[in-house]
Image 1: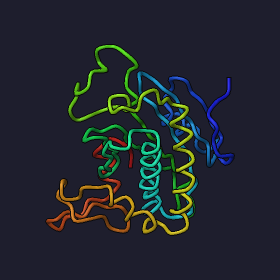
Image 2 (image 1 turned 180 degrees about the vertical axis):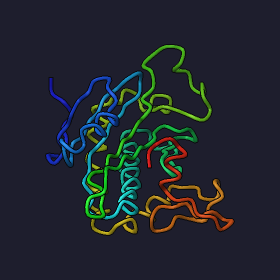
Image 3 (image 1 turned 135 degrees about the horizontal axis):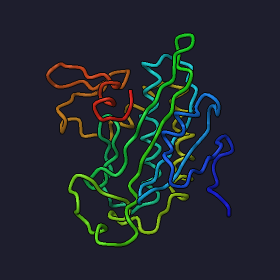
Length: 226
């Protein structure tokens, strides 16, 4: 059985129903950069890619925004064009007002001032294929691809699209840093809805009242890593 067709740089590790993020964290050092683990469990798609940044942890974390842009573009190509897609700081993708995808970040020990590895995890709600839980509106705060009219889009197709866009956005991030992706990300972000005035150069949330929330703190509060 043929697996997803990914850009040659990636080494795919299919896990069936396993936890891709947990696997990547456990094997990041030995497997190395561009390892891409993925799996599906209970109508939920998960994948995690291992990176080896060459900059300090504080700024390396901002690759998260490049990954969100990549998945956003993948969803835009696979789904109905009329479905509104927005980002939520620090790690959410919302479709039609409901959370459909979330990201995690795991960072290895620093070596020479930079993290030895970084794992980017993404989880997407595909939705159950049938049954009563597939009814729209079962949870007003969350949604799934099937609930939003993505039809039969499956894990393999989603992984292929995400990997293609991920390669492009990470290249842009490596060339220009967070500044190369910030405006693209904020264009799909309702800052006023969370009382924010913008993001600083490290991806920290700048609140309208003058407070600053570091990206690591936002991820920790969301239970999605540091």
